View 1 (cartoon, chains in turn brown, blue):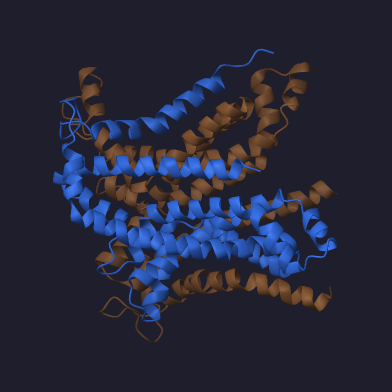
View 2: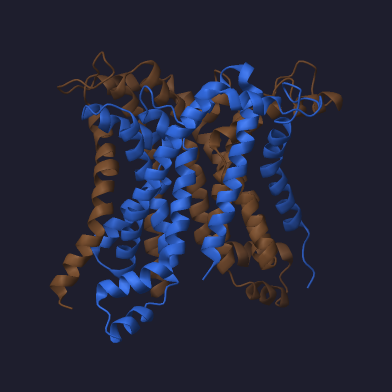
Length: 286
Length: 256
C-alpha cells in the first residue's frame, strides 16, 4: 500500500464525521461568539452591522448572584456525586461479575430514563400532597406548612440525582481496570482500610475521577430545566437566563453573550485537565 | 481479609436513591389517588386516559421518526469515525478525536443554543429537519465511543489472515470486520436511539411549530396538574421500554 493511498483512505474515512461536526458543532459555536457583537432584530433574529451594545447590557451586576449560584450549585453537586460514586464504584469493581452487571443496570436505567421523567418523579414525591411530605409531617420532622418544592435545596437534590450516573459510569470504567491486589499489598504493609482506599485506590482511578468530576461539573453548569421545574423564582441558574433570553425576550445576541460566557466556563476547566493529562503523560514516560 | 461494610452500605443507599423515585412513579401510575400521597386502590384509569390522549401518540410518532433516522445516520458516521480514529495516528486524528470528544462534555443548553444560532442566521426554518440534525450531532460522539471500545478488542490479525487467503481489502472488511463489529455498532445505535427519544433540552431549542416530540409533550403536560397521573402512566411505559433497550444493549456488548 502506498503512502498516498493510505492518506486518501484516511481522509475518506475521516471526512464524513469531521465535516458533520465542523458544520454543526464548530461553526455554531463560532456563530454564538460572533452574534455577541451583532445587534438584535425585532423578529428574534440577528441584525447586520456590529455593536458593543450587548456587552454593555450583559455587564450588569444583577447577573452576579446568578453566576455565583450556578457555580456553587455545580461545585457542591460535583463534590457530592464524586463522594458517593467513589465508594460505590469501589464496591462494584469488587463484587462478582453477575452482581456487577445488576448494579450497572441499576445505574444505567435511571441514566437512560427520560430526564424530564426523573425530574417529574421528584416533583411528585415532594409535592405538598405527595408521599415524602406526608411522611415527614407524620413524623413531625417538618412544620405543617413547609414546602419541599421550589427552593434551592430541591434544585441541588435533583441536580445530584440527575448527575450521579455521570459520575458513576466513568469512575466505574476506571475502577474495573484497577488492580485490587495493590490494596492487599497496602494492607500487608500495614495500611488501614481508609488509608489504603485514600492512598492507593483513589490515585489508581485518578483519570476516571477527573473525567467524572469534569462531566458532572460541566453538565451542571448549563442546567435550566431543573431550576425551572423544581426551583423557585429566585433559584435561577445561568442556563435559565439563556433560555429566557432566547424564548421570552427573543434577544439572540444577549443569549449568545451569556452562552459565550458559559462556553468559557466549560472550556477553561477542560483545558486545564487536557494540559494536566499531557503533562502527566510526559512525566510518566520520562 | 476483613472488608469494610461502608462501601456496601453506600452502594445500597445510592441504588435506593436512584431507584426509589422511579418505583414510586410506577406505583402511582396504578394509584387511584391523584397526587399519590396515599394508596387509594388499584386503577387502570390513568392508562385508559393515556390511551385516549391522541396528541401523546402523535408526538410519539414524531419522536420515533426522528430517533430511527438519527440513530441510523449516527451509526454510519460514528462507525466510520471510530474506524478512522482506531487505524490512523496523525494530526488529523488528533483534531478528529477532539471534535468527537467535545460534544460529550458540552452542556445541552449550549449545544441547543448554538445550533439555534446557526439555523436562525442561515434562515433555516426550525422543524423536523433541524431536530434531526441536532440529534445526529449529539448521538455521533456516543456511537463513536461505543464502536471504538469494540474496535480496541478486535483482533486485527483476522484481517491479515483474510488478506493472506486472497480476500481483497473490501472483502475482508465486509466479510470479517463488519460482522464481528456489528454488535458494537448496534449497541451504539441503541444508545443513540435512547438518547434521541429522551432528549428535551436540545430539541426544545431547535423545534418548530408542529414538531412536538414526546419529551416536549411531556413538558407541556407537566404544566397542567390535571394530566399529572397520566404522566405517571406514560413514564411507566417509557421506563419499561428503556429497561428493555438497556438490557438488549448489554447483551449485544457482552457477546464476543
